[in-house]
Length: 164
Image 1 (cartoon, rainbow, N blue to C red):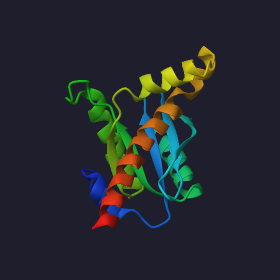
Image 2: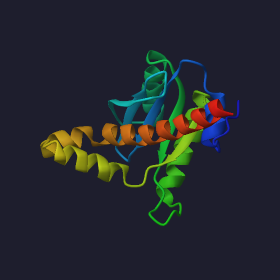
Image 3: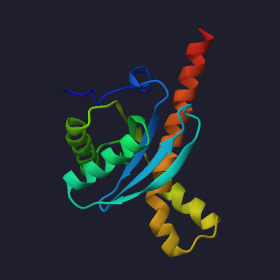
Image 4: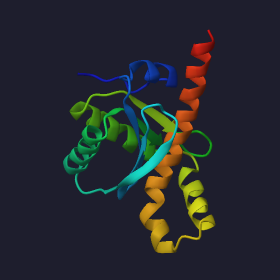
């Protein structure tokens, strides 16, 4: 089953099952940070980090989280360059998404993740977390920031639709 990976926030919202959660992902070279939304799409919360091993193992770990948490859609951070261009990391992220969706078809929305890791790092420094704690948590906090940005956009769309 082919899955559309060029969804807009509006079409993404239309494809989501009712009362499902969203899983936000920050895909790094060594880890995958994860955050989950509530079913009302109000708040994002960090839920952990997968230490990357092999695609098949990483994909199964994600599928387990999807099943355990009633996830209806994925929000995947897209690491575009500061000038908006797409480099090798974007290609790698898109390849991961295509391969994953072949195993687990579901709505997926790419979300611009520029500066999410920097913002996560700053927030943890402000919270006076040790360097070790920051390293352990930065990917899931970044995933939370990515997902929260998406939730805020979806909230605007839902409000606009309710007003018409």
